[in-house]
Every structure is written in C-alpha cells, then in structure tokens.
Length: 278
Image (tube, rainbow, N blue to C red):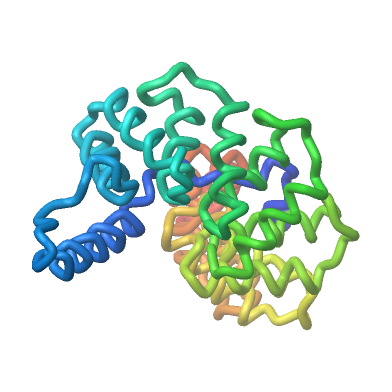
C-alpha cells in the first residue's frame, strides 16, 4: 500500500550557513566594553575607529539596519586587520551580494581567512564552497577537511555535512559508522535533517545496530520540526507498527503533514487511508 521509507543521502546535502554571526558580535562587544572601562583611567573613554572590534561592531549595526554597503565598509576594515568574525561576515556579504556585487571567489577568500584562524562558521562555509565549487575549484577532499574542523568544534551543520560525506563516500571512504556518529552529534543539537538521517540509520541498521524504536524516536524529532521526509517515514512506522504501536490514525496524521508540503508518496498513502475511513 505504501512504499518503504528512505534516507536523505542526496549528494546536494552539504549546506552553507548564510546568516550573520550575531552571537559572536555580542561577545566581542562585551569584551570591548570591558576593555574600554579598564582604560578609562588612561583617558581612553571610547574605542578608536581604527580598532577592529569597533569596526566589527559598526559593521554588524549597519548590517542589521539594512545599510549593507556601510556594513561592508566596516567589515572590510576589520577584516583587513585580521578580525576573524569580520572576515566571515564579509564572506557572507559577498556570498549573498549584500552591499557588494555577488562574488563567490571573494566569499571563499574571506571564508578561508577566517577559517585559517579556527573560526568554525567560516570553516563550514569554506567546506561548502569546495563541495559546490563556488569561488574555488570543486574539491571534495578539501570540503571534508574544512567541514571536519568545524564539526570537531561542535557546529551542528558541519557535523551533518560530514555525516552526508561519510554516508555517500564523498571526499572520504564510505563509512556508515562515521556517518551515524556525526548525524548523532548534530541530532543531539536539534538539527532536523540529522535527526531524520539518524532515524534512517537505526531503521536500516547502517552504522548502528538496527533498532526500530530508536528509528521512530529520532524520526519523530525531525518530523516535529517539519522535516517532510521524516513526517512521511513516521507515517510509515505507524502504518506498519515499526518501533511504535500500529495506529492508522497517527499514520494518516503524519502523512497529512507531509502531504501538505507536497510530498508525493504521502499524498498517495493518505488517499488510500482516507478511502478506508482514516
């Protein structure tokens, strides 16, 4: 009646984070304020416009206000002084064409500058550049290298990306155990796609011992976040009683959630269940 479930193992699975790094900005602002207070006795009541922390702050303020060209101006001044956060944010501006002409080469360049300083978000995005061949020659080995550095720092998106690489054997030897390991790291941080893939690992026994209960647990986590494939897969689990008590009403509910997002398999499955009165 319903096709089996499947894993999200498409080669396009690597993603670059394209949001401004506001959290790091706030940390640096706090540090700058402390430094300013400490220097008050020496007559330094406010930071100099040549201070890269001040420049970064101004870039962030202008970016959030929608003044992208001014944001780029300030980010670039800080980036040229070696400020990793500014280098990352300047890369984001070039990646999205915010305040500058979109330029993947420049984006990759500035990501590399920040990545070399250990900046996890930049390492992840540089890995994405190498994966997609944006601004650099496509190189899966380099994609894995930079993604792994970010993943080891705990960045969930990089952990997911690394799992995708191990799952498909992209830039590394295929290794389901490593794939499941990195999916689990990201899943524990609430990454929906990693939760969906970890659920599939448990369902298929790929890299972990087959366990339908754990499969349903992680699939539900992803489904509740709106992951379409997970919603469909959870519907299949309820339909067949795999890892959960068989429940056609719950199956219909989760199929309907996936169907609302246009998932073809869920639409067909829901039509069948509706014809049976569910």
